[in-house]
Image (tube, rainbow, N blue to C red; front, side, top):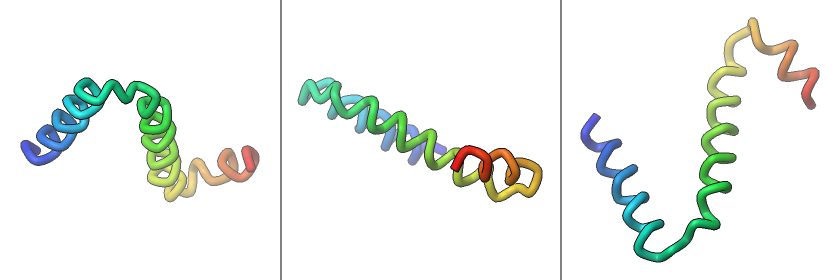
Length: 53
């Protein structure tokens, strides 16, 4: 778990140091898309995912 916190904190410090706030929406969308892929593997959510496409 400490490895993940290290990566997230390094990413946060990078965004602050470089003033790359425009990357934040892309990272949020990437996180939401990965959650969609993870949760779409369950059969209960499949009909809802197919209705969105």
